[in-house]
Image 1 (cartoon, rainbow over the protein chains, first blue to last red):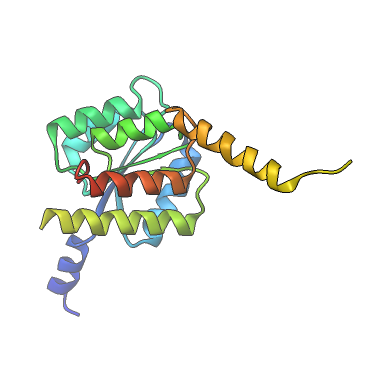
Image 2: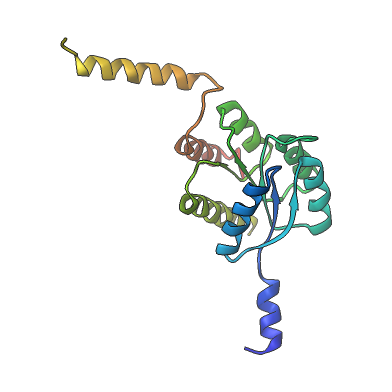
Length: 138
Length: 46
């Protein structure tokens, strides 16, 4: 493989923004992302940072927590979907009250994953929703 | 003490149905998956 091909392959990596106020969750999610051969381009500790980093990096994929200080994930999701209607955002949270799940999906979240989901299932849900998203964009 | 298992299971199932009719019940990952699927079928979701 020559350097041009290597460079092209690097460019093809899906860019991910991680949003969670808890450092250890961001570390776990970074491991998940790396194991899926995706690339974390930025990490945010709250919704306000997430919006700013989304505008700056334009990631392909966002993993968004809900309960966070300053601005929660639901508000950040609204702001991102408002500005970037094609954004691919997956909520990854310990909250799973049905009204909140429904609200996030209606706002535009592509999927909603509980934090107590196993790593293998989490990866599976991410892959499934990403494939659906890519199909819907064609 | 004797238990009527069939009756108990019926009651549990009824409780679950009532519980799920409440909008703020705690959804399992399977419930969420079903909801996403239903929303896609109705075209309410990308």
